[in-house]
Length: 249
Ligand SMILES: C[S@@+](CC[C@H](N)C(=O)[O-])C[C@H]1O[C@@H](n2cnc3c(N)ncnc32)[C@H](O)[C@@H]1O
Image (cartoon, rainbow, N blue to C red):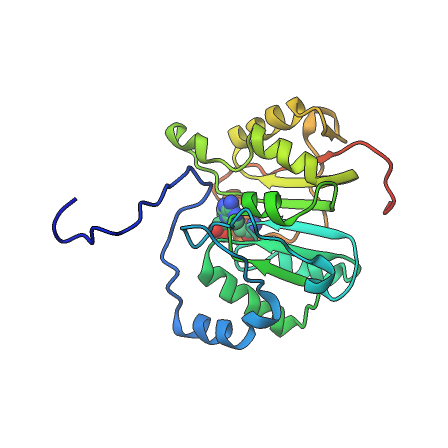
């Protein structure tokens, strides 16, 4: 420690996370959208030391947050909502809880939700893994969407990939029997890693042989998918179910 550093500054434990810790600084139009609309869509939760963390004491009253009781869909990492906004709009019967750590993207997302008058989305601007742990009750989730998660292509970064055995077990515990996890990636080896991890999770089964689902027609092509296709990569859709009776068809 140098003399220039404040002696009392608390030491922040930085665990391995699936995202880059980027500046939360917003452009003026993003700041305006945030100021105008965040109260309609963004749910504040207690944090630990970092702004993307969620304190273990945090709880979420879903009926209060959405103003009704409806099947729950969670999206991890919607970015600016290029697929989330049309998909939530097309499914007015479900509530969509989105976890996104990058605040400028959240500002764009709230702006798009307000423009499209989509009432069934709420956002927590924090780490989805902690959100699933603390805010989503066991067997409370009808569907989870994870589309084009950060690929972390370098081998030394693979430990940062979101989909690993621990997260798979957490997701399985949050899905209700009959609930489904839909994923997509344009990175061949990440798709393989997803299949290996999800096939090994005893509470999840693929509803397609070999874990490769057909492209989900409801999922719009985003710039992340387009970028992969333009680079000649193949897009993999995966769909895994927690076995059990389904009450929503
Ligand atoms: C490559 S982008 C994909 C965006 C969007 N799903 C799409 O297909 O257009 C991945 C997004 O996930 C977010 N993200 C990564 N890890 C996350 C986590 N643990 N919790 C919440 N958001 C996360 C990133 O900030 C980024 O916006």
